[in-house]
Length: 298
Length: 298
Image (cartoon, rainbow over all chains, first blue to last red; front, side, top):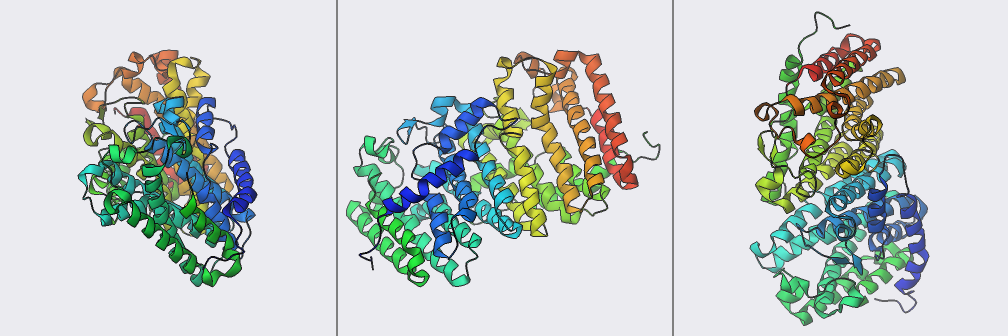
């Protein structure tokens, strides 16, 4: 059900990304009490060349529910802060031990391990500060904090990462793999959509549609990530490729093969787009983003 | 102005500590999606033999402002979660590299470095979840989240720790030392008092009194901590002693000498008790806690 009139995701990105980057920049400027080295590491990790996928989901979700972009911007910043923190900590020597991220040295490679741990801690804390201080009215701010903490914590992203680093010891089946990714990637994608919707005062039907959309693009995103690791080249991906296989880590192509994984991703994107139908034309940006997830090369 | 009728702090601790421990235990029980090893590390770090000083400050502050203990309990749990997270991350090999904490192996010694990093991340996230979900009304929940994030983040505790690990490179004067401790210890003590007061619907005069009390016991607490490191023995302190000096780290006795440091702590406790006068008899618990800070041996 792809419309022939659908604008490519690049157009939405060209509109929203500068707004997001300027909002992130403003919220990580020098402030009293924050040492220069720590602030540099925070900005390096937050303002680098990422896709800003999660903040765009927040903003496009607000729009899909009839809201506008500006009131949702603090939530867009918050989800990107949590994402940036998770990458910094995941890259640490004790975790995935990565030297390269988005084509640049990882945070601990550039600033040292102690500053990287602290920069991650700071980014996680800043996410809740931005939500609690800036989202209006305060009832919605509290609801956003609760939703974000719920998916970021031990039953969500942190729990998924714990199972992921345990990796080779866990059961190597598709259910385990989906459970890890539901918590690590899917939950953050889902909450990005939810925060945008809450701020735009969405109704139950809209929330449900976005939830279905999010579950499908979340897993599709992870499958295409795994496929890029198998097929991609280091320069385009901006990080080490083939590393999943080297580590014996569970992946979709590893369990299902490349062809079946690709089919599965396509099917999920189809279901994601179907879920958007009740939201009407306001959801065009989200539909375009779903197509991008399938076609991206990094 | 110590009253002869003041109950010893041990009596307040005997009343409140079991309530706090049971509240912390309930909020860290097994939950879907949280791997067993991670949950164990969280509970090990959260439920160990600590003093529960910060949660007691929350509860006694609520009481000093005419409120009761039960509605403030989620905030008491939140500040202890943030405290526990900060200890787990501070103890990591890349930071202070400590093997012993409260008489037991540190979290990374017991569970490994990756689980320790993740347990700290989880505890920080849980703190905001507890506040956002449980504090009523939601406006106060949002205010509590904002206040806690403000002092825990890059301009507060994380910034203080960054300066502290940079340690030997920073200026070795009393202003630098006080600035580190204001952010590392003082700010968390101050926000503990503030959360209790906000939940008890305190007025401006009460908030100001608690703020003055907090600034004084915060620094006094740090001075007595440094003094214990010089004088204490390992068994009582439950951690390595004399380590500050070995590391060339800034300390109050190092800069001012033992005698002047002791005098300074006494003077601050006197000022803390003076600050409580406007709060009346409801603040007896806080006064008793101030006396304990001065006299504690661990």
